Image 1 (tube, rainbow, N blue to C red):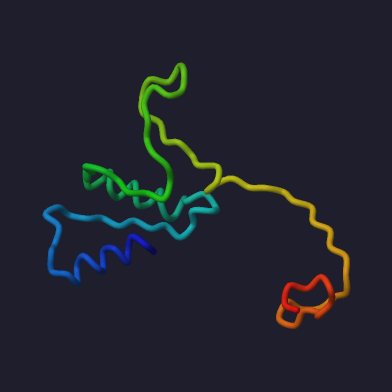
Image 2 (image 1 turned 90 degrees about the vertical axis):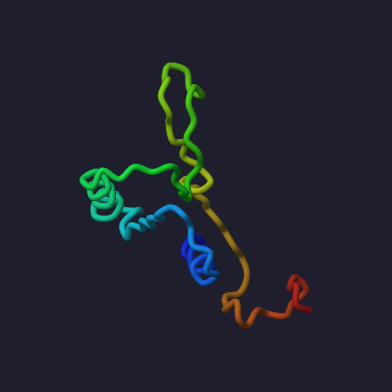
Length: 109
């Protein structure tokens, strides 16, 4: 969404970029990307479209950072793509956050 906002700002300023900008957004990233990113990649390959650089929500491409791999690799940020299992136990009277009880432990009192 931030990328689209930036593009809107650039276009409305009248200072158009000298190069073509492609925006690719898939709708199924969290379930494999077979109909989003994969289709976008096939079209770009078919049209022989090459990029000077790519802006992505992920981290960077690096070479020589993992022993045994000489080519560039894309690092996956676990803070972005990771997960965490948590078991949370709460004691106290039931209720709703919009109407918390006003007792001695309540921050609102």
